[in-house]
Image (cartoon, rainbow, N blue to C red):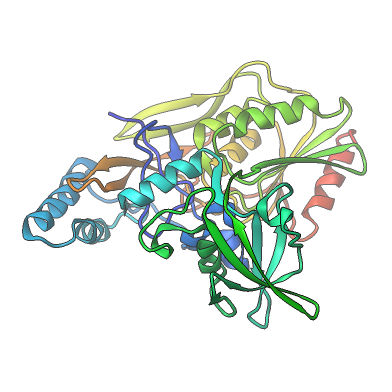
Length: 401
């Protein structure tokens, strides 16, 4: 049986990662969808906010997989869309996190897991009047080289007015996603024309897209001998980056591990990140068809620094797995608001037309046996806008600030 997994940044039809078949838990970019602000690197054009899932997979997994496969095969024989037939079968199954991916979406998902994307290096948000504003420009990106700044108004992309469009759609056009690119996938070097405005100046700039990394781990120091390690998503290499950040922090610093808005990703990377703070031992258990399996941290982590984990309603999946492990093993104080509650495991399978179907096959639990799916993780200390300040107070109370 292949290892279970699910999408990192799921589009409307979610796709699997069949090549590596790495353990991943499905997630959505809830925080970005709620605030109307996305970074093009996250494939946000295909993100969608969803309600808290429940344990509603329903029925034997094998039987559901067979039904989806049969539906796709019938559609092929009848000359209708296998993808749509498979989607209807998944919907009828009652599996809330089950989904079907087209081959293109499958390929895009693989690229997302590698922590890279094709784009120009812009983040965008929508103002209350419907205008689209540049919220961040990645250093060294095509946008930065063109002199675009945070605060510039984005008026159009490739001649299409973007005011009042969903930010996710604008980001999709910026990236040149397949369905917005005449059926072709945009590659590095392709051109995109941006209509911009700054104060009274209006101009158009044509940029070439480039392959950029997602910068999923960033580190900064704040007052009071505190190192803040922000993890946006668990893409390839994230775990080792967290370990390096912890090892490189000044010896007397406490650590704030900021997982707010982290939509999940590769569980293997979350386990490696847990290894930065643990010296071996259990990180989580999960079940596949009733068979229990365990995930363990590596040896040699820093077990002495005080740690605070920041979470919110956008903390999901692999990020919840990491949070639960550090909380259960008394290795960190969790500060923020209740997490999303995505703790189910999906298994991919190929359909006759090359699409990929994912169905829920099990759920994971924290080291103490807590189920996360539909429940989330309750922080030790509730905090919202002042969460980082509260984290600093906690570290001070622990004697490291």
